[in-house]
Length: 120
Image (cartoon, rainbow, N blue to C red; front, side, top):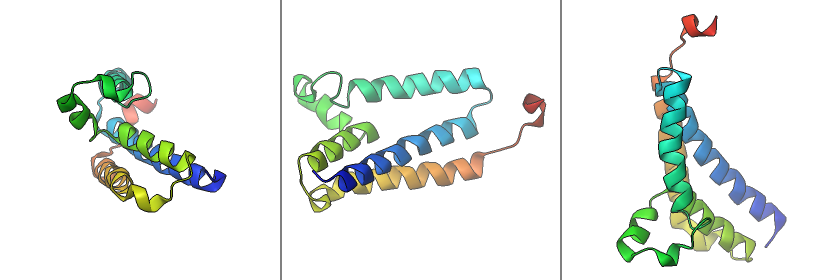
């Protein structure tokens, strides 16, 4: 695959995952709660993304459920682009990643609040 296409795909996955992190940071009441929420979300995403355990060893219903996770969509996109496929083959994955990034970023903007007590 082309280095530019791989970098673009990686950047899209990165923005999608970071936007989830921004949402967690803007809604958690403190850093301890944010860490717990991150762990609850991150480890299942990592487990069911297909990077740690091959996705085909899971039962079909679990494979389908894992398909909605942004990290799974990112792995599909990155694998395909790395193999030289064009972005046109991955419109559903790109759409899911963009949708997650947009929804999480907008939600984090509306839920963010300054807490001056914890900043001191």
